Length: 190
Image (cartoon, rainbow, N blue to C red; front, side, top):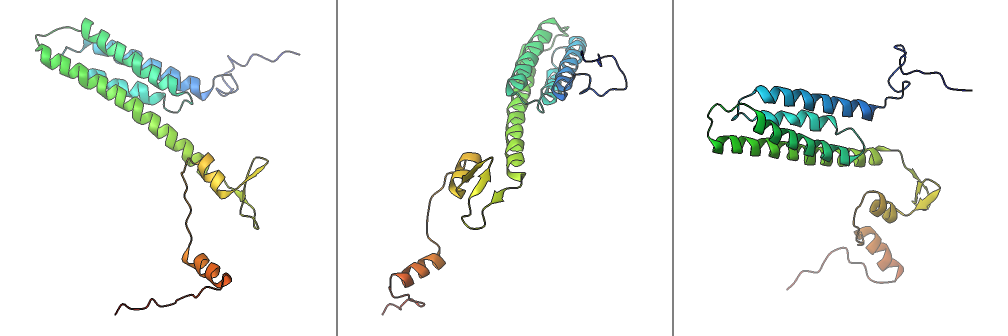
């Protein structure tokens, strides 16, 4: 039995039509880049209009693949350079137009890098915010079907580097168990 064609049904959601959120973000990024490019062609040289491509780059941040964000940033840089070649020259000094091009390219690249960092941090928060099952006796953490020690979990899932020490409470208990004298007060130096 074949599935009905939902792509043209206006009562269906985008997901039901087979259009995922990633596709919508990508479409928004491409449309905004096209609109900015067409508008940039009418803007005289010497105006850093290309920095508006940040909008297109930011549209790709929610997409899982970081390649798409960096690819969009590269495409926006190409469009910025292309627009500078095509845009009308009103006699603006070349140093000014080159500086504005540099500012636009820098803004585009920085937005892609910062967007990637935000995406990574959001993924870490999502990992951390999940409810963890911890054994009441061994203090091991359940991940899937495996029980991991606290150290294994912290290093594997949160990327933390760990070192070990001993608390004052544990040191006192250890000294007591070993029959060593536990000094409550340190002797004063005379």
